[in-house]
Image (cartoon, rainbow, N blue to C red; front, side, top):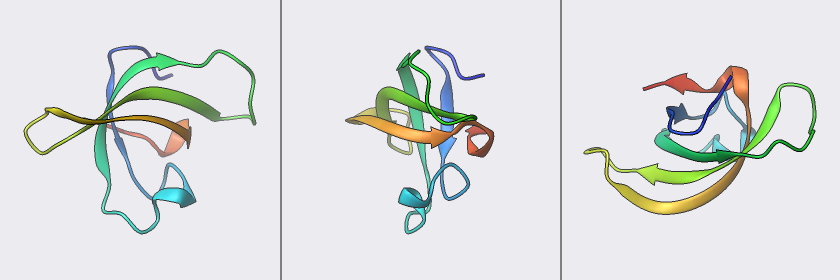
Length: 70
């Protein structure tokens, strides 16, 4: 289960929308509690650069089982 404050790795396994990217680290600010498809979730947070600094605020729809742990 993803929680506020987690840093997760987002890539191809999380969603087809990230199929063309090598993946990125993402700091979770909030998890939308509204129901979606089983195993999927909306996350609000920040895409991180290689040094762990926030570079872009994003809202992403991902498969929880496809997220990696940083």
